[in-house]
Length: 340
Image 1 (cartoon, rainbow, N blue to C red):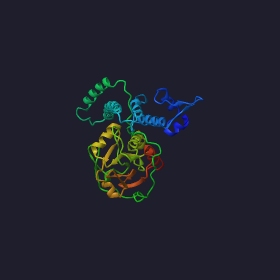
Image 2 (image 1 turned 90 degrees about the horizontal axis):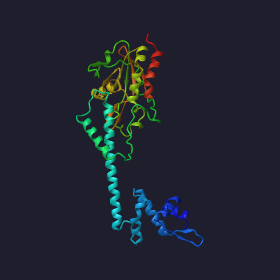
Image 3 (image 1 turned 30 degrees about the horizontal axis):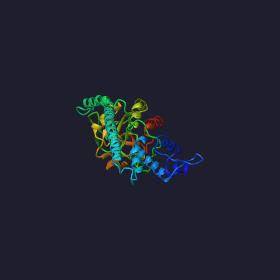
Image 4 (image 1 turned 135 degrees about the vertical axis):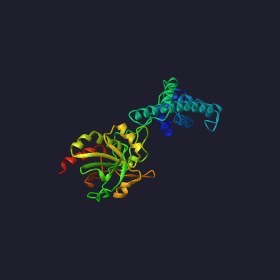
């Protein structure tokens, strides 16, 4: 068979076949006209090289396997030299895995230190020292090694093509309702009564949960319409807080089912100028029949925003999208609807 036919038969490129020949791994006979003539045995050798290469064994180190076939063995790894080749490849892979694992641990430590640097929540005892020692030892061992990446979630940016939530009518009943007599713990250390927010307008944006930059988001989170973007939404309210107050809001609160300690870390890390309210029992959802959803066995608030005035819900934003622009949406409404 010709070289093109061999390449198709073995599932490789013609260039690869010529490379194998240059290394002496495949030696076709020459016809009288000078053309190479490949046999089924040559095709078998090429397929074996391709298979071993896919396992991470360099082409140059497939010789013991090919030599095993040349002795008439049924399988290329029926010989002791082939088994030695496997062991060598396994040992090298083990070393690389250990190096990658050590580098990943160092990167994770740097990530955690950076994530908590501006937070009042300290790292667990000993993590900083252990991370530094591991980093120093690792640099000595693997200074010239190549490493892969460990992708982490960027909570400040929204991925492209997020599903857009649809208005399912779950908030249509809310405008005009009196707010319930519920007190919720705040990140300021006080309890805030939803019914005692005052006679002016208060903006309460309700969100599912905020992530942390040292941990990946749960698989499937981005596929839930309206779920992704809590950190970006908080930052948008932070960046437009003064404008919201100037436009007539007497206060802004974030509200979720996460506990106060978790929320306090978010407030400090993102430097939010407003407090968060914790409602782990979803008491506000029960009292007002707010929309919720279930994820990983937990019931969470769907994202919406209440404008509360005179102990009643004056306006509702639902659904909210995109969350990283929502504070500006609220700001535009406040400016278009000045309080009398």
